[in-house]
Length: 449
Image (cartoon, rainbow, N blue to C red; front, side, top):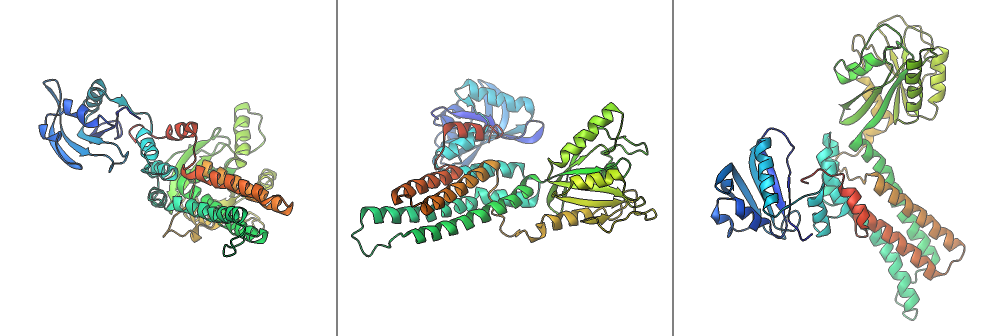
């Protein structure tokens, strides 16, 4: 990290302003070479200066330049941010000048990576920054902000402190058995402490599932026979003609995807080919994809006709939906009723043609996923596949320790296993990490962040 990096931090394209960020030991001296305001050199930290960016004697742009001295910056290094006019050519020219004068082009996420390596943030806070950038709803934004502020990190730090207390007492009892005033860490007390730890971890994991829904949404497939109105329901939910709607069976032969937000919950919708027996090769491929999707999505909107009795195809789909999250959307309520709906679960009655009661689908989704009980005042949830995988490893490690205690393993071996679990938890916040993990993690970030 001895080099000085630079990158465009605003989205590429035409805009009112663009920001080019510079960070590193030579940030100030490099910018001084291309900035006309001579007061910048001796200016105090956290000040903004007016002037021109120049290429030798040629003016490139009229700019405002922010000067921020280490360590009170995002990266804990000297940082400069050049606020330029938002033209693509001008912005790229300023970046080119910085690179020509000694900067290195920043890799994706390198500014945030430096903030982590310099102790400014931990790994969960770094991941939350990217979540904040990508947030599509207000709740997702609030949840990410809690991560950035360190609330999520505190969940893990509390777990590590609990473990550290157990480990310390074991070590003291092993090394100083003669001290009578030290609490003896008996097997029963270890088991009691581990039980409490498991409860906390299970609670965090349960809440993380809710957090994932708020962050990434619910992957939802619209499934049913041809001509039950699947595409019409998609169009009603999205509010536009996303899918082609005709009276011809088999019109939808491949999936059509769209994302919407209903009551602050993202629905990633997939309209599928109608499920039926067919000799059409192309339609048959679409039907197979529809059946496969049932096992891949979080939720199925199973669409049937209000004015028809359930067919054998309907019943086969219902059988495949056993043990799945699904809502039965009974469409075409504007027609006469013939459906036998007494034994159908999670029913919503709609008319896609007249766009009636379609909003009730969102209410049923909230009920089915228990989203109405989400505590929105404190959205402190640990999310991400990496973090959940580590917590599951921690749970397995705790179960192994409990098994070892039952098998009368020596207490010093128990202590080693507990220390390994403590290190595992440290991988979540980055107190324990491997360089390959950092490279992979920060490569997902955008350039300039």
